[in-house]
Length: 130
Image 1 (cartoon, rainbow, N blue to C red):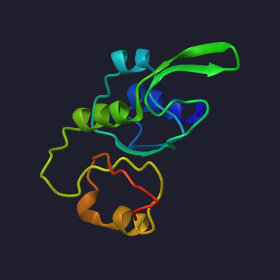
Image 2: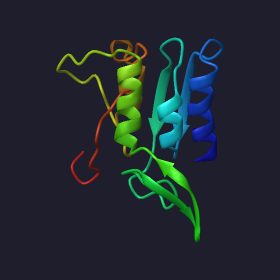
Image 3: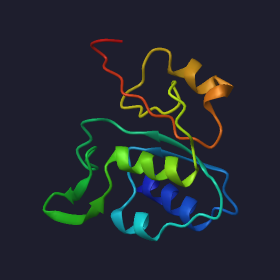
């Protein structure tokens, strides 16, 4: 989660030197989201579990034991931040995916060039109903 948060910070602060980031089990802090101003679009891949014990999927306070470490955006709001920043347009098809867990065909979705162009892919996956 710390590495994911660092990746978001690097995208915000070093966008002239970074083309893309991948976030694994982390979200953007509320403070970073308020102060983030990348100079260009950044490709972003977000991977986060629904039941992460440290970084809440729905956002809010991050706790480590009794220690409160700050507040984070929900994963959905983090994705929306990058969709808006990158000026992705909604065209009514499979353009935005929030990958809450990996569907069996995720690799084909990722490799499909029509789905990639500085846009965050968003999809909910229910492993009981693939």
